[in-house]
Image (cartoon, rainbow, N blue to C red; front, side):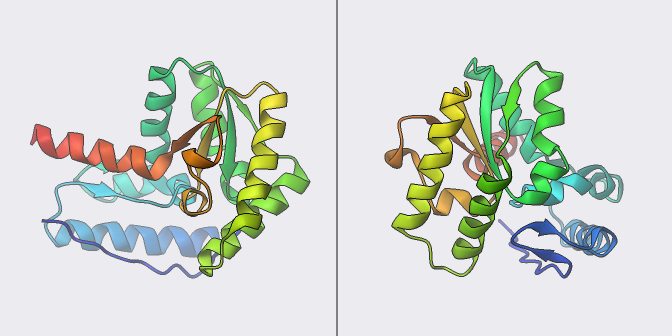
Length: 192
């Protein structure tokens, strides 16, 4: 059985977290509700809120899979040493992927200011259900620049990004963090 708990967050927008304390409180409340509902495992699709991973994990006794760590494991398995990051502005500013990956000697190529603004617009379009060819083109342009800067692959570190672009649109390897965390959850359930 799967319990899906859609938690609309106040203090959160297409750029990410705008009110840290409010978002943290809502997330802790949410994971506690899932634990009370009888869950054995929690999977959180949003990359950005993993900034509060430890606070959420400390608030409950059941495991929460960490999307950043699971993605890191997959990138390491592939032997990649330099990856580009498509993510929300908050995820980039909080260095969620950068800090975790660089501990394992994987360099993260980050978007510049203009590229981040384009990523924010793509995220906003997807959130509104209006993504299309223009978003694919924007992401492919950023991916090409990342490749010019030495990226061997791209981590799509935002829930909305895989809804705008997928592996059929580009030759550069794309790591879909949502797919990765779902596969980790399936692996977890097989071990139970």
